[in-house]
Length: 371
Ligand SMILES: [Zn+2]
Image 1: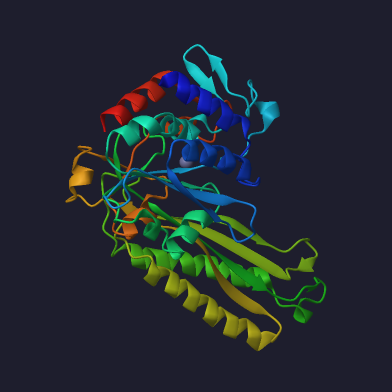
Image 2: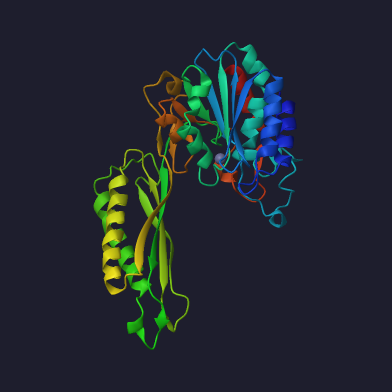
């Protein structure tokens, strides 16, 4: 079965599915494979009609099945930095090189190579393949909003998000939330500062207040020593104002990212930031009504904590907790017992010369057969 996995992986790697590129060629190929095996398939087009997610059921839809979840997209690969062609599977010693081998076309290829065995087991399995996981998680969000789980018939009894964990079950991960604060001031010649409104001053006030508000909220958030670091964090990603030393800054912006523990309520924190921006907005408008301070919430990737009481989760044994985000939180929120579990090492994901050890695919193949 490993030969078949490598054959399918070879094809998947040859189809460039960088997040900026359409995934349709990959969807066509995978759907054809699934259709040939007698799976029931359904594609869900993205709003712009250029990409699609793919749903499939193997076996009797009336029985509660297990979902294998994956994403077809990858991060970009700068070919000139690579020692191997990123979009051609290259075998060197025990490793298969190519963009997406670890994250996460290797796992997808293994499932597709084993469809017939899964079908023959008499159990029911589902496949959920998304796009834009490396971008804004828009595909999984769209699936959840469209009640995609109705496609499965009976409510699935479990979900395996096949991110690279070296087949270590991951039972929790942090969530990720990003937001931006935009200040529109009024630019002026620095010889006549009274004619302008300094956007920089407002972004600095926002920065200092944000730190204080975070400190206040974080006191009520319980840490968890199974994570590293063991608490919810916030970082300022960008902070900029103005464009020349002899001008009053006419615009400024700040962006921040939170990595939050499951159970830490970040809504109150973000409400306070929204309130802060409202107060600053009133203040800046008192100087010039055309000026503004805006709070722009961005992408939120749900934190994830597996249901420790579920038999499905227990089946995987003792799990670990990690700081990187996956689509798991979206499935868990639907009440589907979920685990993150797949071949390959996350350390190779997103890197130059990304590879997966053949032994990882072999182990995953064995595991699929035994499920
Ligand atoms: Zn991934």
